[in-house]
Length: 320
Ligand code: GLU
Ligand code: ZN
Image 1: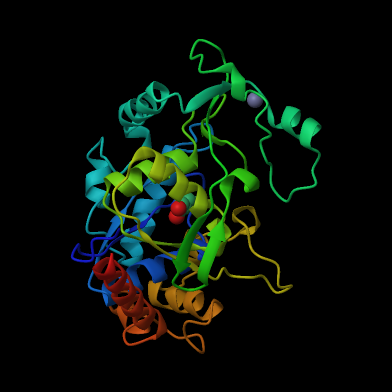
Image 2: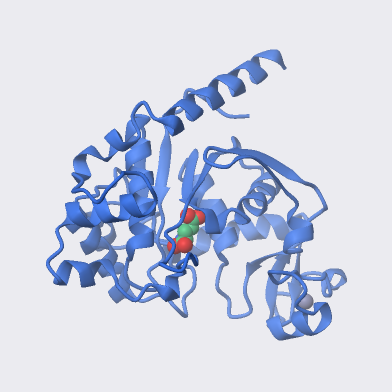
C-alpha cells in the first residue's frame, strides 16, 4: 500500500568508486528535474558499501561536481557530508545494517555461504546472463564465525510493479539471481541490502535510476517485504546513453569524467544540455539552466503517467 499523502522523496545515489560521468548526469537530470516537477524533494546518498573500491577522493569530487553543477539536494547536502558521519553515507550505517541483519538471523532467513564466484560458475555453467546462485549452502545455517558471505533465503514468488517509463513489469528474483547475497565474503554489505534498507529508512518513495538496474527492483521488493518495510516506492528506469556504435556505456567505458569536461572549458549548462540531448530529453544540444530542469518534465508524459499511477492506486485502495 502506498501513502499518497506523503510528499515525494527521491534520491541521487552515486557510488564513490570513480568520478561522475555523463551517465550520472543523465540520472541527475531525471532525479532533480522530475522530482521538482512533481513538487518533491531530493536526497543525496553516497553508496560506499563496497569498501574495497570506494575512495574518499571520489566522495570529495562528487560533492564538488554537484556544487559546480548547482544541483542542490534537500537532504544529504555537501556541507552535511563534509561535517562527518551522516545517515546518508552507507559506510556510516554499519550498525544499523547489522541490527537489521540480526532480525533476519532471528527469523532463520539467512545462511552462511562459502562459495566463491568461481565455485558457483563451475556448478551452474555460464548459461545465464548473470550469476545465479544455486542454493548450495542453503542447509548449512548461519555461522558468523565461519568466513563467508551471508545469503537470504528467497522463495519463488514473483513481484510486479509499474515502471513509469517501461510500463508493467514482473520479476522472479529466485529464478534470476537465486538467494540474495546481503553481505559478501569480505564483510562488505551488498548494494541490494544497503539500498533497500536505506530507501526504506530515508522514506524514499520514488526511485529514479537507469535501465541497467531494472533487474534489481524485484530483488529489492522481495527484500523489503521480508524486512516488513511499509509502503512500496514507485519506480522509474530511464534510458541510458549509448556510444556511437549503439552499445550501452558502462561505468568502465566512460573515459571522460564531468571534471574532464569542466577542465576543457565546458559550462554546467552546456554539459547538462549535452547529457539531456543524448537521451532525447531535448531535441538539440542546448544550454540548460540547472535551476529550471523541472521545465523538461512539467506537463510532460512522465508527470501525467505519475498522476495516473497515483489515481489508480487511490482507486484500488478505495475498493479494498
Ligand atoms: N549506487 C548505484 C550506482 O551508482 C545506484 C543505485 C540505485 O540508484 O539504486 O550505480
Ligand atoms: Zn554457497
